[in-house]
Image 1 (tube, protein in one colour):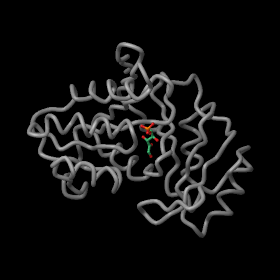
Image 2 (cartoon, helix red, strand yellow):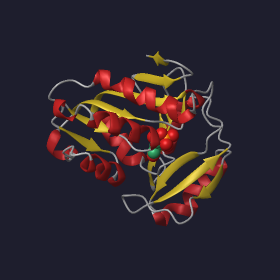
Image 3 (cartoon, rainbow, N blue to C red):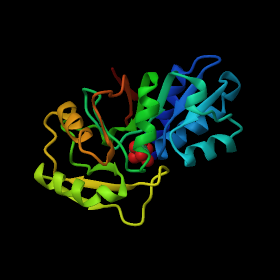
Image 4 (spheres, protein in one colour):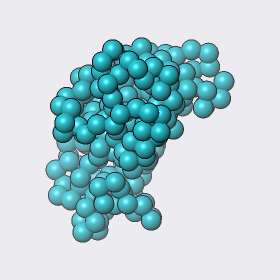
Length: 218
Ligand code: 5RP
């Protein structure tokens, strides 16, 4: 089974968590796109979706699924999204697609966060994948210096602007021994809008596509 097939079976397995009449949160990225395609096959079951990016909103609408604003729906029963890295503690790195802020908002507003991924995303320790930070442009150099102090190597994601009009700094080589503590620490730096560590509010369920089955971690 290819990596894409593994993403697809993980995404399809997430349909099990969708209940009649739900408005659900939908993430961003290639695995989330498989979920949107799967969701389209049962779209009569849901009342609509809240998207974590403009790209996903457009894709949902393209499938005839109503896209709603989180400020109108209130809290959601379910959020389904991918990840760049995940541990067995269900701590995640997210943000390769640059949608981390809206992803964190929708995850925070959701009772259950079901993370969907191919098995290559499972790691013993987070940090091989560069940690994305969404940053207010004027804070770029200051935040980069703080990351160097933490032992990281920051790099501006060139030519990229987030849906919120900010920049992304990707940080390599951080020692992420304690993801919750590091998330708290980076959250306190002025100018950092969002750090791509999802540990304080990690996933509740991780569906990992493997060779012939989906492994469920809770
Ligand atoms: C986007 C994300 C994605 O969930 C993450 O990058 C995984 O993407 P993919 O499913 O394409 O591997 O956090 O900001």
